[in-house]
Image (tube, rainbow, N blue to C red; front, side, top):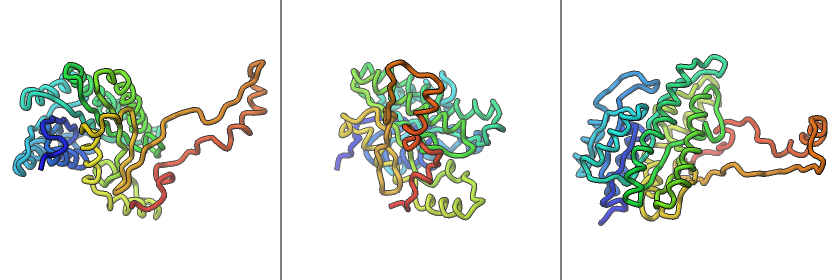
Length: 304
């Protein structure tokens, strides 16, 4: 039985374990040849298992799929180019880019160091740009391609102690939409997924309170394999009319997330003064102001 991705070639960054590995496996099972990219670092970016990509790629090949390993870093422009070149050299083309690589350097904002800020932005946001830009030339030439970027409800909604991660993940949404708009005329699509799954990223959530312990217990029910079907769909020709969108995948639930649009308006013929704003804006806009919620406050029901 032919797969949805037969004949296509995909790159998955951060695919040595967790969500990235599950996505790479799902793409391979759907018929795609896969470049499994991973530098083999810990959650915070220190060297750990340099052979993670080789092991994940070997497992795909052992199951009858097609995969090749890449240990190049997404955070460096030239190195990211080598990831795309590996797809071209090994499989002759590139059809799907999944930007999944990431690290965490959590800290309350007033204690966050410039190094902690830059490290996370470099991998998540700059890394997504670097790999996407390297692939864009070939997507344009072949008049087709699909980007799938991993964002997070931490960026879309909010979380404590993650200013760097939140900024990077919300920046990825802007990057994805820009790619979707700029490359639409070349039949290239770009979408985001905010994945809910138990992984290294999620395992760092503090469990100091009873509420946090309950939240983590729920997250443990959601396996990385639940994310792969949505990635396969977005990479397939069946999603040819889906671009510039943000989805959340939570166990057996899939959500289309909103994007910023005007929700209330005020106008004053003679213009505004600070005093007039103080008099009218709080009452007019107050009920519509977005509260300072965390992801768990918005997704408050048990996973389905």
